[in-house]
Image 1: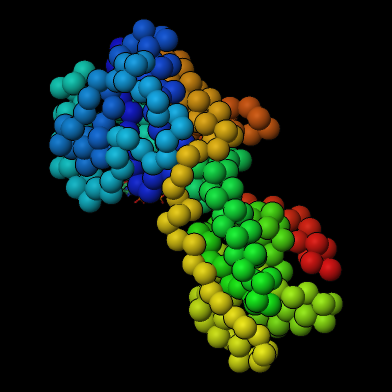
Image 2: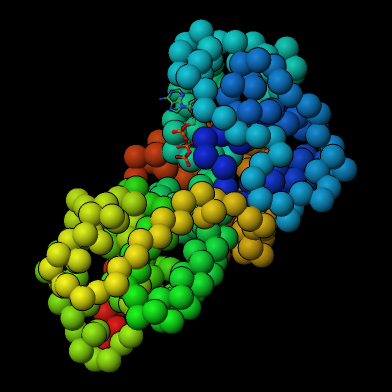
Length: 324
Ligand code: ATP
């Protein structure tokens, strides 16, 4: 192995820059070349790349987003597209690829590896933490902190006006963000995709909290919560069934994806970059780098894609007890 390429693909997440930096510097440390590919797989197809040395990644560890840019590429879903990508890698003498992205990006990488036998290693970068084989994905911790801070602000205004707020957070298939920020910000109820707690329970819980003298309430709702109602429909439902509430809805949206990475994500990104490059140098391919029990671990990409990350159900109980 003499030259490694690195790209960011799919949705961006805080910590991607820190991971690119780590890949580039680990290459420099081991005296091999590193190439940054712009705009994910689309840039690979178009040959849009640039050599990265240890200095070209200065001052980015603290920046959100990804300076290599991310993209979704329909062309890479076609065999012709992937062939072009392969030809560009050969033309630029690149021997292996580090893919920073989510499960879609890993699926693309796996297919590419199958077709051309080209070595690939994945680094999980997504705020949802919905990837099997790692306790934490890059950007997840930062997103938790951003969301908790936002809910704290909403609570200030909620308690000034005796209001009930429904706050929608990201998570179409995974409730990690909702569950953790719900507990962290002291939400009355937390609605997630994994468990249907039922609408009755929501009403009961709100009534109980009113009877106990609470003046404001926050309900955290994951985008894909299992009640089947979106956050606006939920608010309407409560309005109809519990008249008298002053209800507001807040959809946090893309602010959750931005911002400077937390210290945890910067450290995680640095460790994942080192592990990714050193795994390639050991001849490994088709794995995803992850963290478990504070140790770096490798999971086969197909397992990472097919497996389901589990929520911590203990948190549901803790949340219940905290809202007594
Ligand atoms: P996130 O879900 O966090 O946004 P992701 O990596 O899952 O990230 P996707 O948009 O699903 O994001 O995938 C990113 C890119 O990976 C796609 O635009 C496409 O180029 C490639 N890709 C995804 N699935 C496949 C596939 N089955 N075959 C080939 N390429 C794929």
